Image (cartoon, rainbow, N blue to C red; front, top):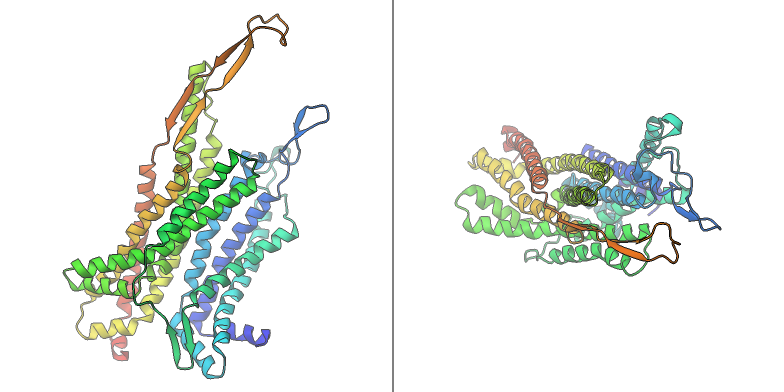
Length: 507
């Protein structure tokens, strides 16, 4: 199949296909913009400690004009890059949700293409090409957003100081790699989703396993937590660069996210079995059977939301760590007789607050994606719902079923995501220790420093446990559940519109 033919077939379709392309491209644009921001931070040079021939140390120039210590200090820049890359994972999960929009109409179009003579591999290639083309367009839009934000946010202050690295442009190789990473990852997501699909000239068959999902994703969560701890363990025994340190931690966090998202299938199936077994009404029985028939619906619709929640749990763990670090340093200063410095860990705490704000934005974007997926799910089954209404099923029963299908897998999966993100941090940093060092001083200040008698003074030790941020966890969890209730309410309005008289006649 020629590239021009593949492009024409991948961009054809109805308004639903156009909406899917726009939403996938929007997700790719957001992910591309964040990746370009990470590449820009990586391009910042300066601030590294260097040693002159005479043995004196100095800092390499180049980053002293930034107002934020997160950009001035080279040891903190890998953490900024790590946080930015971590925020791209929920956005990529949102792109995976958008791929499923309008799937029944796309399946019929693929079947028609097979009927016209296309091979099964070509039909799958067309479906994957839709995602890749939309992601390429989104990456191009992300580059435009990135360039526009550089011009808008470039506001030099006194002495040429800058809040953001808008004066640095990344090298072409990492720039192109960041732009191509989004289409490649989106294409892989689309290929994985089409793996269990057989496209025939008479329709699309989705192979389903007879038995329910297994709790194996819990093993991925455990391995991800261990991998997150590996760089800390290695840094005690060897010298690791900041980028290797961050890459290992990013891989561990990504594995935890995958385990949480995939594990939602088992949670949904188990919740469906419990509802079907102990339910005492048509609402719970219908919801239970629906969740058992399609347990992976929760993984598809909640993927981006759970990814953002894992990051939120980790950010709250770091926030509690930095607050405890500041308290320990203040207490240590009081013990040694020096005034406490309230700015010890202020910029670390502010950085985690920025991450929490970004997580809130990610939850909002994920909720919008879930709203699209929920509305698409209702519309794709509108004839079934209309037939149930025509058979006498009350509308409140269908609405209650939809609510149970949304909340039953959401609440336990949300708790798992929060705990997994928090454990990522607490598995390494569960307490803070300050002090314990030794200082050698001469007993006679007028004596020769090389030959004088010395006294060794040991500093006091302050050890504080890092508390569990219950209030913040409950705030994030409660806010997410409230947001999903609003999404479910809008879905019920769509359901009500899909069971009107015209739809009943069509059914």
